[in-house]
Image 1 (tube, one colour):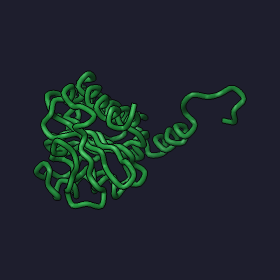
Image 2 (cartoon, one colour):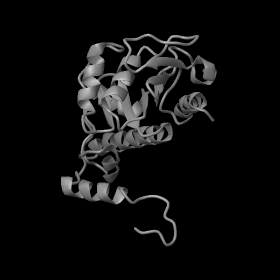
Image 3 (cartoon, helix red, strand yellow):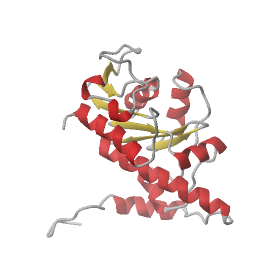
Length: 216
């Protein structure tokens, strides 16, 4: 599949896994000096590859395509501009992440998988109206040194090195939110230390499919 088809498939996957519903959420992908991003207000299963909008990363909001880009294009563009390590951005209104975002509770080191995001905490951004420069600034600040953040009274956003990686991180973030929410109901979590998270991060560097005879 091409980039546009990958974006369409990602939007459907977010609905099928319960991370989005209706026409909420959006996905973007770096494509050279441009950004490919989902259109505004279209239910995922109705988005066609040709509906994906193209926006210059150095632009001020101009776009090309049959449909206008997501109203959240600004923080997608700004994340891609400020974070060369990020190639794809996924934004969802996933239930457990949004519940914590409504309470403005960051997620501490409740599980070693938090190391996958590049830190020991998933921060919650300040609140700002959707689609505004203020929201973009708040998201960038909350994602400093991390691949994700909660968005106050809104949802979550993650950045990955590919669309598949960003989808994986979105699901992992929702799992962390689910675990943290429920741990609070039974007396609160026992947090891992910074050293324990750092050890996990080092382990992740060599985690994955291993080929026989390859150096560890």
